[in-house]
Amino acid sequence: MEQTRLTRRGSLIRFGGFLFGLLGWKAGAGAGPSAVESGAISCVLAPEQTEGPYYIEGEKLRRDITEGRPGVPLLLRLRVVDASTCKPIRGAAVDIWHADALGVYSGFGSGSGNRTFMRGIQRTDATGLARFRSVWPGWYRGRTVHIHVKVHVGGNVVHTGQLYFPDAVTDAVFRRKPYSRRGKRTTRNANDFVFAEGGKRSLLSIRKSGTAYVASITMGVHRS
Image (cartoon, rainbow, N blue to C red; front, side, top):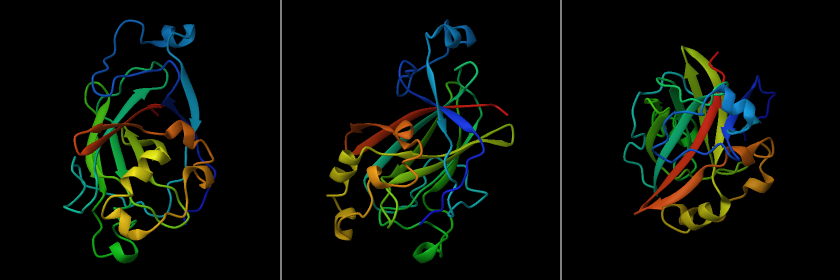
C-alpha cells in the first residue's frame, strides 16, 4: 500500500469552464491572463498527490509503454498548460508509470525482473499535448485504479500527481480478460485514501474508440 505524505505544492487541472478539445485545442485570443482574471477561463486549484513507492528515475522516452503486455488498449492524451496564462507549454516532459493489467509494477515484486514496462516519458507538442499508448491499469490491494504522473519543465519537477478512472468504466473493463480472472477488486474511488485528497479533480475523461479507450485531462502547472 502506498503511504500518504504532505504535498509540496498545488497544481491546476482542467475543470468547469476551462475546457479543451481532446486533441485539437490551440491557444488563441482570450486565452491569456486577462481571460483568467475576467473569469472567461476558470481554473480550479487541486492538491498534488503522493509519488508513491514505485517511481523509477530515467524512464524511456517513448509513446508505447506496453512492451507487449496484455490488456484493454488505452490511449492517453495528457495536456500541460501554464497556470498563470492557461496557455499550452511546449516541450514539457510528462513522465508516467502504472501497474499492468494484473496489478504488477515493473521493478517491484513479481515485476522485479523488468524495470521498464508501463513506464515512459513523452514531450508535449505545440498544443501542450503528450500522447501515450498503454493498457488499462489493473488493481492491487489497498488502492483504486490509477496512473502516476510527473511533469518536468526546464529540468524541474513542477507537478507530481495521480490520475483516476470513473469506476463504472473500470467495472466494464474488468469484466474482460485478463482482468476478469483476478476476482473482485478491493478498493474503489470512494474508499481510496489518496483519491480522497483531491482525486475527483484528477479524473480522466474517457471515450471509446474502436477496441480502445481514450483518456484525456489537462493539467495546469507553475513553470518553476
